[in-house]
Image: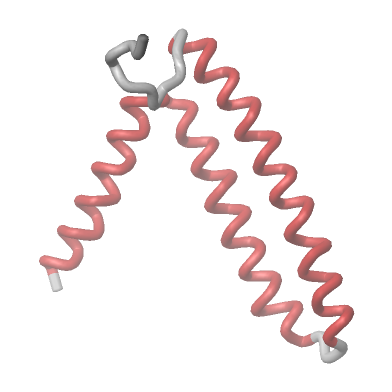
Length: 100
């Protein structure tokens, strides 16, 4: 079991290290917003909206949750992209070599 913990937390730690290395500290709020929106959507869908018996209302409630969460996450990600480019002076995931 300890081997699985090593793999999971080792890969997770490497992912955090690599992302902070490329994007800087602004990676943390971006990951928080994206993962939080994902978790909130599935929590509402499977815990609360599953109690709705009318299928049309279920679909409308799901869409009414998904659309604002996606728009909010896109807005935050755009703001953080601009701040990252301003802070680093370049796009964080471009290659080191310039293409001609």
